[in-house]
Length: 74
Image (tube, rainbow, N blue to C red; front, side):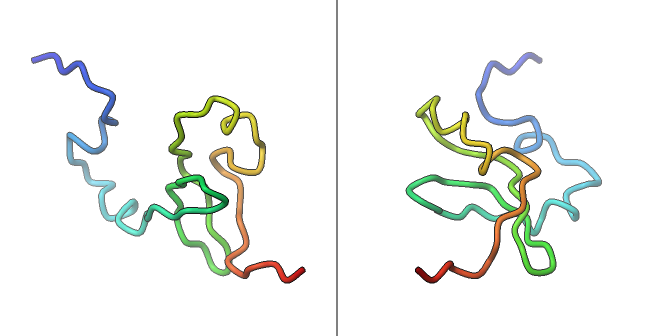
């Protein structure tokens, strides 16, 4: 069977690694949706969800980056 879909393979087919990704969550930061994985005191960016190609050029939101959990006070 061939599936033509934009849905990631991990969302369709289950694997033994499901326990590892079960902590992933979707958060909204600066009007962007990010799939993040909680670390000790930060979030690791797993995926950026956006329809604007310019959002993908921002290095701050690329996969693997760590974001602070604490809001910055200005």
